[in-house]
Image (cartoon, rainbow, N blue to C red; front, side):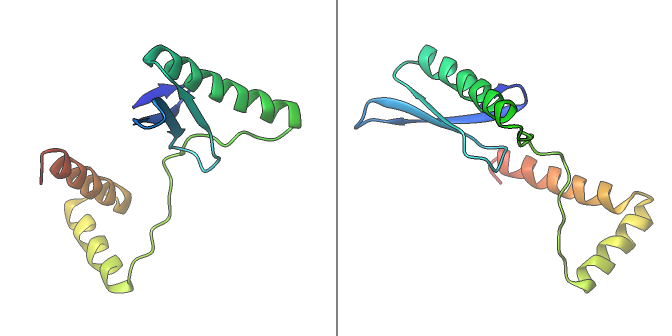
Length: 113
């Protein structure tokens, strides 16, 4: 994973075209980049973000920021009630409970679970 100005990029290698190509993954706007060497792909990644930010400024458009850390989750009323009760018993907020559950799930996945 590549990181520049808070934007995260992933890279794949196309063995037929013999190029690396990448995408910025933490924004809804489409920002891509490509290169034939590691040095080129790193430079193209940074240049694409800088070009995107310059384009936004030139056109008076607010650039899409990397994710803010907020998202809405829709749950069934029963599940909502269950986790609210558990969070209250643990004396933590509902947000803290959900964040911990997600963090625990990610840790399991990273450990092959």
